[in-house]
Image 1 (cartoon, helix red, strand yellow):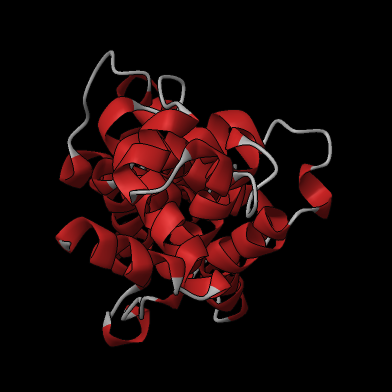
Image 2 (cartoon, helix red, strand yellow):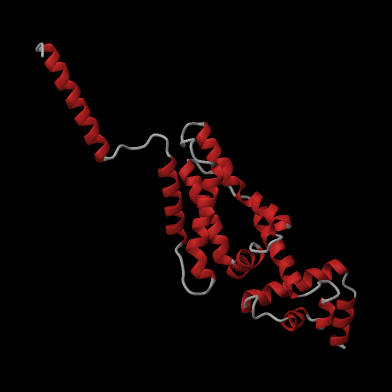
Length: 233
């Protein structure tokens, strides 16, 4: 009786609820087995439906995985970043890098599917993911533009370039981890990225020993010329 009752309850689910159940099951199975090893039969079993039911809501496995990752990425965008509560441009850069690294750490399978399967797609720029990614990376652009306008950053490098540097470095440092071949330290990577970008773009550069030596040499030469003039030379 319990089984029949359960089946009746499942059959009464709305299309939206059934879709949500299937996607939740897919997310659980994908996270446990990886998207390459996930079968629709595994997802159907997890969701408590027959495999044919999944095809009523999704065209195929890839279509289902795309929807799962789309919902997941949307969740990340909806989270308040708390960036405004952080003081200092370098600290803000570090937070943006740290948050992205943390997302990858918590959901490596979904992050890998997005980076390795969805982004290389020739139609990527016309997908919802492209626009979502633009929103996700907008904070770096706004932060670097503001720093340049205030004179804190040099203004001879495009903010788009700095955005690409930050996220490109994150992808490079997490590539082995996403393939299951290595690991990374979130704090160390975030610190390094923020430090390199900030020091490289800081408008009031700290003079190096070489710079100081050259300045001293020029001053000594100028002093010598003044002495010669005073001596009538």
